[in-house]
Length: 344
Ligand SMILES: NC(=O)c1ccc[n+]([C@@H]2O[C@H](COP(=O)([O-])OP(=O)(O)OC[C@H]3O[C@@H](n4cnc5c(N)ncnc54)[C@H](OP(=O)(O)O)[C@@H]3O)[C@@H](O)[C@H]2O)c1
Image 1 (tube, rainbow, N blue to C red):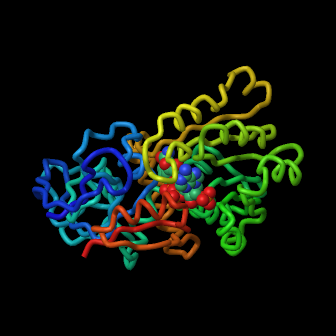
Image 2: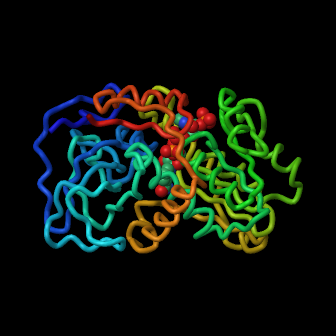
């Protein structure tokens, strides 16, 4: 089969289209003919060798696919929506090996798509919307009227978070680059913030001098410290990424990462108690070990999709062979919403 292989850790040019052996599903696994691949920021970090557990090159990156079940190998656990069978349209969250025509994935991380959902939408929902939903409602317990600051509000997770926030009746602050401000207004961000021109702490505290209930921060480094300053009593800082580690050229810069690490705040338990605030870490890879919880949240998200409450924004679609261009597009911060690789 055809796959996009990372030859060595580095910039997007390290991708190479190669013929590799077809995956051989083991007991408990599902063989999927891939139709669409969700490109996640994590894939960029995998390619750069900055993501936990990334194999040594050469390897095939990626963790989110939508496609059609070819076969289910005996021993596959029954999904909670009923047993999977050949011909089912599904989305799956494999651990690497997504940038390929075929994937063998444990049945525990394969989910049947709602009837009529296009593969592109399928590949755009789980990673982004589960992260947002889990942070905001399962861990964060947000209530109507609460105020939330969403960084990267025009990105994949960001748009998911904005749509979920609107559905819950939250007051929304959102940061993005200058070219995305109009889009933020269009999707209902009440307080769009251009992070190149405006200090977001000042912008938030001007509107809410006592601080707000939640900040979603995947930028990392100094941003974690500044986001924390936006919280008031009962405030929750959700840390779920470290985008700052990825420079615009897509190369590894150790000094950049080290500087960002050094700028991270050190949270004191007594200070958290004193201020009555929380810091919440969210890592979808870990939550997958609570399979039923994640499946329940995805069921709810699919219900919201079917009801027209959420709808992923597909920013741009590239053919599988153009994985390098897709990654560069994200490094250039051009994407609004999800980037998809399509497999013909
Ligand atoms: N913990 C988890 O389980 C989990 C799950 C999914 C995603 N994540 C994390 O969430 C973050 C967003 O993921 P995503 O898939 O939504 O990504 P995305 O669609 O590419 O959006 C990320 C946004 O972040 C901003 N950004 C900030 N620093 C950046 C940098 N150095 N390079 C490029 N963009 C940068 C960009 O917006 P502006 O240009 O407008 O600022 C961009 O639109 C990533 O850090 C990712 O690793 C974590």
